[in-house]
Image (cartoon, rainbow, N blue to C red; front, side):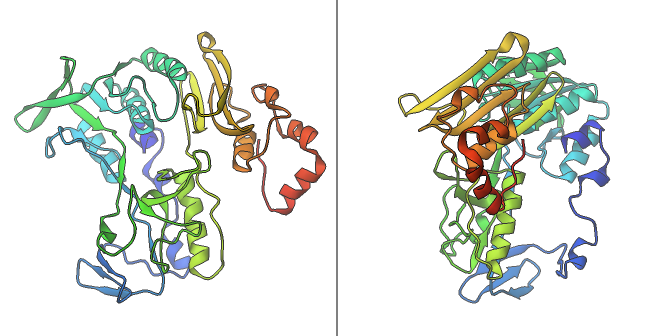
Length: 386
């Protein structure tokens, strides 16, 4: 959506599937209907138009909704979120004649939106509550590189503060006030403060809920014939070894496949999610996944290649000689093999000193683990990509 907002792609490239996808798959698509409630006792879902549909097995894949902070009033002309094609089109309509934009939030959506608006010629200010941008994805040292690239591209970054209120001229947005006393003139404000899982549909059904809908390794909820996948599902995280919502497209795709196979009787186990993110913009290619800011005195080991002056930062986090996370800035070629080692829980003790070598690849892993190890991966059907 951010590339569409920047004018780099057209709307046709936003759609994942062709228009006839469901028909080709032999599935009936009920477009324009919204499920209002789920009745597990009757094994039915009720739509808001009164339609009732029976099910043997049900998948909840309702995703998540963009979070609008409570101190930003709704209905103000100029306040937006970016979650859908409709949102992007509304922002594009609002840009006409606008000069100043404020992006509220320093996550991936906020960063990409800031660059898109700057590309459109707006003066952009990013307001970040945390001490640095991308705080859930990288550490302070890596953020120093990213924030430098933002400023080089004309984007102002205010960290450690938040927008407390907005000013209007009639119904139209005029300015945003921050808690440190700044008044930022703005015609456009984009709230990029994360998402909330759309779990309201199953409230009161007996399905276990925490941050999202709790699932087991087969993506079943606490009701065995109801499954959940995607941004609404709470699953096992391989790196943290805890259950959480990883609201990422890659996780949603894999979870959907696993849930679908189990729903038709082909038993499959979901190994778990990995919180992985990537972003590229002028002067910074960045990939991170897993544990990036390990707690002290928790048994973690950190390997570091810190060349922030040259725009290079590489960090690998280990625990018990197994990779638990990493940050790569501007030297990202080894990301695939490092992710593979994390996912397979490989003991890297015999070659951990080579992990930050810019030419590190799977051939070096083979040199330590041997051909038998490779054959085992191959027979298991795993593809290794460096």
